[in-house]
Image 1 (cartoon, one colour):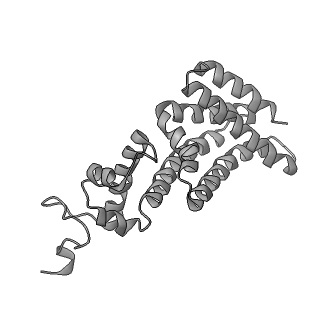
Image 2 (cartoon, rainbow, N blue to C red):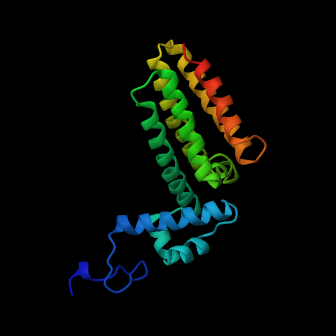
Length: 205
């Protein structure tokens, strides 16, 4: 039997007739970890829960994520940020005025967390609960990525370069704060969105 027809000895064998490439196996593990982390949070999730959810062995998890839970957490966070960034990027590049694009961009953030409320906790609270420098650094990089889309809209509106960093970081911070209030039921969604839009568009020159 050729080596490519043998199931890797470091992970559980796939179902009959189903052979997964390493990239597909890794994606399945991330999907399982995402379900577990969103359901229980970082502190409540262990490799045993992820292994059960993904129907894989703990050895398989360590093969793809040598540092275990922290590596998995980063991979899940990256997948969520990638989705949010894609929606923000689409809104930021629509053929409208800067103010209208900013409103659409803010709406994209609100829509994402309305559909994935637990993602807010995972991305902006659990990263600190992890108490891991690598996870924290990853979170800061994610915020910088999201801020860059806001900065692109402000730049197109003619803002001075020295204003971009402060204004875009301020808009993202304000947006996340009102999203949290809406998710927590302290502010109704429409009021939170309108308030955020007013603040965000006021930063456009």
